[in-house]
Amino acid sequence: MKKTQLYILALLIAALGLSAFAYKWKVLKFPVAPNEQTEIWEIQARVEFEPKKGPNKVTLQIPNNPPGYAVINENFLARDYGMSIEPGKGSRAVQWQIRRARGVQALYYRATIYRDQHEVIDAAEPKPVTAKTYEEPFATARAGLLDSVREKSVDSASFAGELVRRLHDSNPSQEVQLLTETFNSQHDTVKLAKDLLADRQIAARIIYGLELVEQDAGNTLTPFLQVWDSDQKTWRTLNAINGVEGFPENFFLWSTAQKPVLLVEDNDDATVEFTAKTSLDDALETAKERLRAKDRNLIAYSLLDLPLDAQEVYKILLLVPIGAFIMLLLRNIVGIKTFGTFMPVLIALAFNWTGVIAGFVLFVVIISLGLLVRFYMERLKLLLVPRLTAVLIVVVLLMAMVSVISHKLDQPVGLNVALFPMIILTMTIERVSVAWEERGAGYAIRQAMGSLIIASLAYLVMREPHLQHLIFVFPELLLVLFAVTLVLGRYSGYRLTELFRFRNLAKDPIAESSDKAAP
Image 1: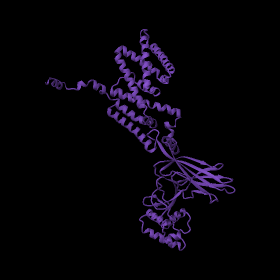
Image 2 (image 1 turned 45 degrees about the vertical axis):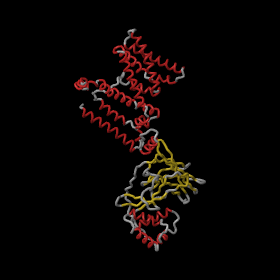
Image 3 (image 1 turned 120 degrees about the vertical axis):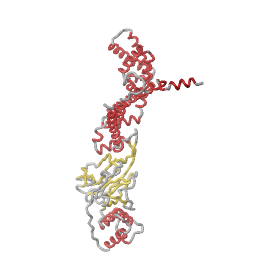
Image 4 (image 1 turned 30 degrees about the vertical axis):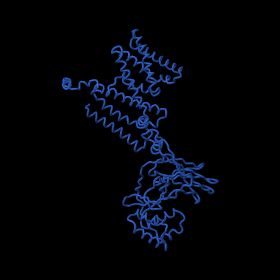
């Protein structure tokens, strides 16, 4: 395969890995830092009413894909009640039923929500509005108010905003005083604004939301007015008191259904009040819960859905490629010699339980004692397989001896020597012994030290908490590592140690001789 094809393949693999990473980070909101916390809110609606004799039916509008937030968990508490979720056009409602009930009834709905900067665009065009007829003097008052508002507006949204401000003016006009003289609540005023807009064929609707402030009880929903903008083909939201367009910060949209938020059959005295509490939760757990609520398949085919013990295993296994890549850089680019290809990586994994200093010492002790035994066996003239088996037995006995002695010395770190890969230790002893005999003690010690240096560096990199978190939560980043490995696989130039070793060859001998000849 030509280098160009290899580079294109590596580029595609890296792009695939980075795209998957960006999608999980930006869209699915997986945290890129460990122990990152995010703000969540617990919102509770408490319905209270005095039941009538016979069957009672309660209908409560509940959030349905609110803009700016995601509902990650819902709980319903209504003892002895039957319950069903009634989907509507862009809305949802929970319906509780009971055949007989006594005493004051309290029903609960609780939602855990998470801030999610997604927008919900409702582009469903409403039906044409039909104006009603009213008796005098109300018809004249409505017409007069709307004519005066029209002079200070340019479109449906500004018309509605000016109308809302007129209705809430501290010094209302005679028309407003007449139209609102029997009003008792803010809801009546908002409904009047909606009806007045209908007089001018402007479609409007009332929606309800909750300002997210910590409050134990007594919080109520706030009505907002939405006006259909036929030019932009969307609903524009207006504050129902001051006419300002848009949702305020920390506003949670509860219901867009054009129905009462709470409806208890034959009972107008039923009440619903809201509480809201905020807390910090682990960002990764929050992202998992949000994806489970949205689409379970998004989380079902990932490492995060494995049992916890399996996750712990993969948290370690996924770091092996990182250690192997560190070894690749130090061997092929820097030029450090090692025994074996993956021995330093396995030793680095063993350092996770011993620590780098204690592991370094234990490794040197085991290898040194094993070498003494190996050199003695050389005199016995054993064949290769029996010799390796004998060394393996000696290595296991040495590990057990080190553990017992360290336990007696009250040094628990020595017990972790059992976590060293004994096969790798056996093969290392054999290779050091052969290299010692064939190329001398210096060469063998340099390669052994090189292996330990790479193992120590790989251990330090693999212990980095941010790296551990990134590789486990975003394992697709290993594709980027894979792509870089493919590119480095074709590198056949000088290593850094070779450049230093042969640096004199790069010098100009003529210039050097001239410098030496100069007085």
